[in-house]
Amino acid sequence: MEIRCNLVHEQSDGLTCFTPSKTQQQFKEECDVNNILRNYVDTGVLTHVSDTPPEFGDFSSVPADYGEALALIQRSEEEFMTLPSEVRERFDNRPANLIKFLQDENNRDEAVKLGLVNKPVEADQKEVN
Image (cartoon, rainbow, N blue to C red; front, side):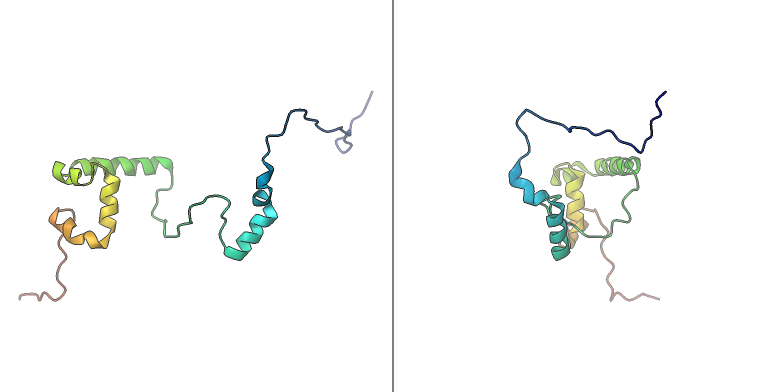
């Protein structure tokens, strides 16, 4: 009877591939983790992941899971469809265009004219007793 121990490993000759490699060696420096971390220490940004610049902001109000996010999107589309057709057409029938429009403070006057937001109350308006 032979007793085997997990601590003793058999030696392997390794893997030999006879087909040409598909590895593209021109990216060797970009993929080296030492270069990636050195760049991160210098800039504070991990650029090897994406060419687009990072965005920073408070995203604490973003839904926690996919189901919540999907329900929010569906509710937004339903509410968008309750707007008059002329208003929807102004935004190419896309709720995302409306949201982008409303996020720009320069569009406040037009948003009031379209009935999308309430007219701001004047701060200097005095109460009548």
